[in-house]
Image (cartoon, rainbow, N blue to C red; front, top):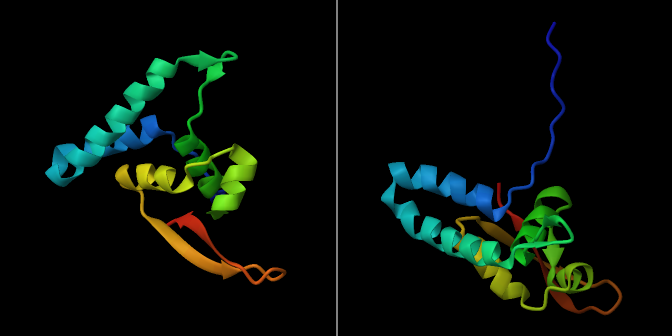
Length: 122
């Protein structure tokens, strides 16, 4: 009788995504531009250094962590929870890393206003 390991969600940082992309780029040259973009982002992060003894978490890292561990996120949630004001630019950064995102349109039941939630496509 074998015991099944519980499924755990993992959070990938930009550095981990870049490592995955460099491996893919060695086998498929189409991944080279994505890898170059990821490396530029890492270089800009590393210039930021550390804050309060902890790794500086970028807005892209925060969004990736949220979508991986919690689920879809809207522009309003990103602003209120993580103070991300350039939400769509961060989504573009995530897409440049080779991550596919799915947009799901919703309607606020109280106000009737349309909004979109974004999630990582699996």
